[in-house]
Amino acid sequence: MNTHKPNQLRAFLVALLAVLAMGLTQCQSPSDKPAAKETPPAAKTMTATPTAPESPSAGWKTAIAQVARENIPAVVHIDVTERREIANPMLPFGNDPFFRFFFNGQQPPQKFKQELRGLGTGMIIDDKGNILTNNHVVAGATEINVLLADGTEFPAKLVGTDPKTDLAVIHINADKKLPTVTFGDSDKIEVGDWVVAIGHPRGLDQTVTQGIISAKHRRGVLDPTSYQDYLQTDAAINPGNSGGPLLNLDGQVVGVNAAIASQSGGFEGIGFAIPSNMAVHVAKALIDHGKVVRGWLGVSIRDLTPKQVKSMNLAGNKGALIADVVPNSPAANAGIQKNDLVVKFQGEAVDDAAALQRRVGDTPVGDTATLTVMRDGKSMALTVTIGSQEDAMRRIAASLEDRLGVVVRPLKADEVRTYGLEAGQGVALASVDPHAPWGRPDSKRMM
Amino acid sequence: MILSVNNEPVQDVEGFVALIKSLPSHQPVLLKALDHRTGQGGMVRVTIG
Image (tube, rainbow over all chains, first blue to last red; front, side, top):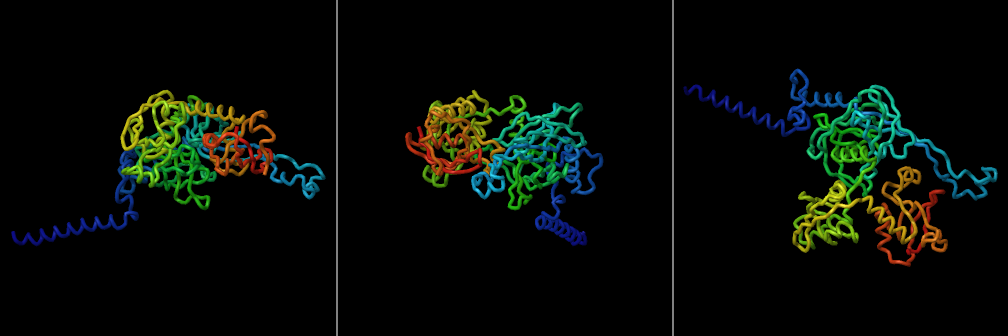
């Protein structure tokens, strides 16, 4: 009996050392053996392969291959041609005798014709031939061609674009059954989840890359007036990937690849995708109505500054601060006031101004919504009937026309490119009444 | 195309309207503008009605 005790103790010590050694291996080099540590949760559901994986790493390797195999047929290559006229950059010197010499004393041409070609990626979202892509892939296109993964090619027509989210839907008439992608719930994806990108970077068709979700809710990436709530990923995304799917390991689209942060112009490990929940909402609106109708509250909103958090004696910086209220707007009619802090929308916490903008924009026009606001340290609930952003813009444009005699419109994507401007810079005068204040010759002069 | 009003950058139609609304009537304002026919930029002085 006693002789067993040293053996039992030795066995216990050996087992203890083995357990400790395993623990240290996992803690010391998690990145060396990622698959040996843990199979990503989503991969556990990818068990379609008939044989069990031979090693722990085989699970997620198989999952990525399966995601690629199932989705590549529904990912398309988009070729875009844009024909346009550009202003002659030499025109300011047109009257200079030196330049007139080169044009035999005649005026140089006012404009040049130019043909630009671009490419991007898209995904077939239904069997009717609708394809989701980025607005910046197809904006300004005079001709769109789609190349399917099986090599067949179709001319495409623009169904609708939404520059505010950088999404667009195009359509092809195919006389055959089309493969489609399926969408997942982007709200449920977590930082650290494995993702797969498929696209046509630099024209290299059906390129598959993988990475993880690096962050969620990224804003301020592009035009500050746009609706941004990007998923950030380190899955390689390069020019040409735009409009392609970012998929979870269940093979569901969780994002639409749209942008990269880069000093060099190439991929540096920071890519951005539009979350699928936003993409589905916009795509449906574009297919059903050709445009996105957004809700409107009639307020200017700001994020809280640290100074405001202190002066308002708040526990944190969550919420959207009302900077101004448009008279006779839905917000004004609901009793919302300047300096109110909106902390909840329909019972859900509002983290910042962009979150409130997104929630209001997504709410159908005419619906009522309850806002929880903090005013003078007290919480109160206000009910607002959501208005139409489109109607509001029409009213605003009408008031501007009355006051100044001008009609303004957003700049078009081709104007931004032609004149070397940046997205979110400037407006265009669509018309000027010659009898109104801004139309009178004595009211303006070039300086 | 209008790029700024009194050196305040114009980002979009809403921003332009907000800038104009904040200005008093019958006062001159300075616009940074771009002529779409020539691509030439310059400053324009106009009076708000």
